[in-house]
Amino acid sequence: MIETTAAPTGGPLSPRQQSVRALFDALAPGIDRWVSRHRAFHEADRAYLRFLVPEGASVLEVGCGAGDVLAFLAPSRGVGIDLSPRMVERARVRHPNLEFHVGNAEDPADLAAIEGTFDVILLSDTIGFLDDAEETLRLLRRFATPRTRVIASYHSRLWEPVLRLAERLGMKMPQAQQNWLSTADTMNLMELAGWEPIKREWRQLLPVRLLGLGTLVNRVLAPLPGVRRLCLRNYVVARPEPEAELVPPPSCTVLVPCRNERGNIENAILRLPRFAPDLEVIYVEGHSRDGTYEECLRVRDAHPDWDIKVMRQPGKGKGDAVRAGFAAARGEVLMILDADLTVPPESLPKFYRAIASGQGEFVNGTRLVYPMAGQAMRFLNLIANRSFASIFSFLLNQRFTDTLCGTKVLWKRDYEQIVANRHYFGDFDPFGDFDLIFGAAKLNLKFVEVPIRYADRSYGETQISRFRHGALLARMVLFAWRKLKAF
Image 1: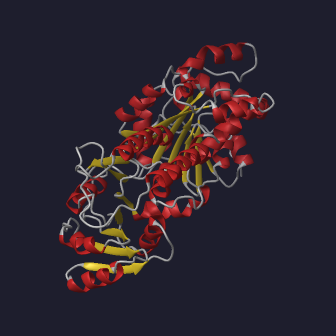
Image 2: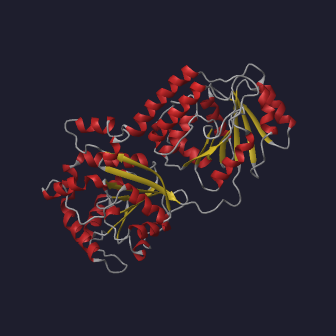
Image 3: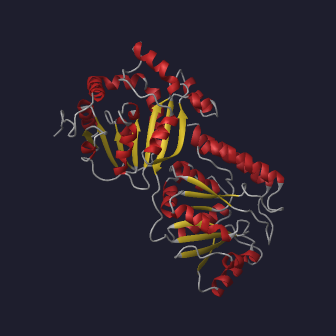
C-alpha cells in the first residue's frame, strides 16, 4: 500500500519549511519535465555522484525528492527523507525497492523513524534549504560509523545571478529562498558539526551539451586549476571526526618487497620495533640474482620469535609483489617497507599510530620535509618528485608531497574494497604505488603524510631508472587526469 499524504511526525515546520514543502508539492507532477529540459546537467551530476559513492554502498539521501538520484546510485540499501509528501509519493511509486520517509531532517523525531547506519549520507542541493545546516549535520551523525562519508553537492555562489535570471525567465525550475553558501562555508559547517572535510571538487563549467561542446569543455577545461573555481557544481566530502584510538590495538602486517636486496634482509628485522601486539612480517621476493630468497628463508629460521613468512612473487615488479603479499596478509593494518631501508624501519611506529588513532585512513610517507642523506636522492629525481607531488595533489584533491615514497599504510578492509573496485582503473600500475593511491582516492579515504628522514642505501643499487620510470610517471598523470577528472 502506498502512503500518499503522510506528514512529518515531529514538531511544527517553520514558515520557511512550510513554503519549501508547498513549492515541491506543487512541482512534483511536473518534475520530469524540468529534469528532461536540463538533462545534460543532471546526467553529469549523477555521474560524478556515482564516482563518489562506492558500488553497493548503503545510502541515506536527505532531501530525496522523487528518488531518482538515489535509485541511480544503485545502493545496497537506499533510504530517502523529504519534506514534500507528493515528492515522496512519486518516489515510492517509481522506486518500490527503496525506502522513503516524509519528514523534516531538521527534527530528531522524524529522523528517529529511520533505523541503522549508512556508508554514505547524501545532501544533493538540500543544504541550501535547511534552516540550521550546522545542527542538521550534527543530527545526521546518529547514522554514521567511523567509515561513513557525508557528501554535500550545491551550486557555486558565483552562479547565483545567472540562476536567478534563468528562474525568472522560466528556463529553470522555481526554487524557494536558499542559503548563500560557498564551499568554504559548507566545509566550516561540517567541521562545526563534527565532520572532517576530506576533499572538495568543482564540476560543470558549461552545464549544457551545445552539440557536444559543453561535454568537451567540461572534460578538458573545467578541471583545470583556477578555471575549476568557475564551475557551477561544487561537492564536499567529509568523514566523522576521529574520536579515540582503537582498543585493543589492531594487528599489523609489514610487507617487505625485495629483489636483489640480500644485504638488507636481516637488518629489516633487527631494526624493526615491535610496535603492534600482533605483528606479521612477509618478505615477497622478486626472482633475485644475489641469493635474496635464500637469505629470506635463513632470516625467518634464525628469528623464530618473529612471525615471518617468505614467498616468491608470481610475476614481475613491485606492484605484483604488493598484490601477492597483501592477498596473503592476515593483519588488520597493511604496511609496506621497501627492502632498501631508505625509509628507516624505526619510523614505522609513527605510521601505525597515525592509522590506529584514526588521524588518517591512508598513511603515506614523505621524504621531502626533513633534510635527507647526501646520496639518498639525485637532484633530478628530487625536482621530479616535487613536481609530480604538486600535480597529484591537484588530481586527488588532497595534499600530497611525495607520491613515490615506498611506505604506504592502509586498513586491510579498505584494501579489499580497492581490489573489488579495481576494474575502474584496471591493471595499469607497475610501481604498485598508484594502484593504492588512486584506489584510496576513489573510496574517499582520508590521506595523511608522515615525514621521514630518507637514508642512503647501505647495500645494492637503486632499481629506479630516472628516464624510463619518469616516462611511466608521465603516463600515470595522464591516466589519473582521464580517470579522476576528465569524465
